Length: 117
Image 1 (cartoon, rainbow, N blue to C red):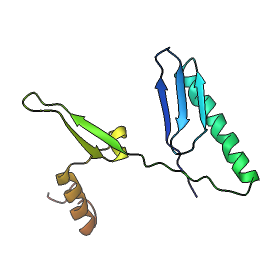
Image 2 (tube, rainbow, N blue to C red):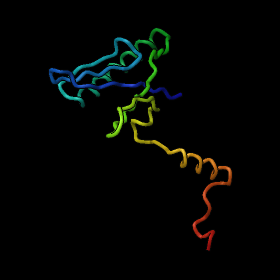
Image 3 (cartoon, rainbow, N blue to C red):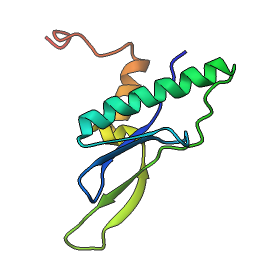
Image 4 (cartoon, helix red, strand yellow):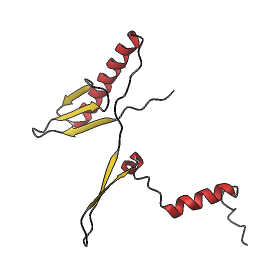
């Protein structure tokens, strides 16, 4: 079984970095750099998971990770809309591409390169 834990790392106003696990209250770390904060939050999460294991419990994430996308246009007001977490990774797919992919799957995948020759 694979579990995913959303980690937030942000720079504070004093220049330090804070990191925490969304949905697991009390699992946090702070450091002078983002890299050190990431290593520290990994250690804090490992310690938290070990403590839960010792108690015979499983982690219960109490968070829903959602992304709001802000589109800024020159001709009208900026808009906000909810998008999938994949948007953070740049894995957007157009409707046309998704439809083509579904059709290719129904037809047994992409045709061979030399099929039209």
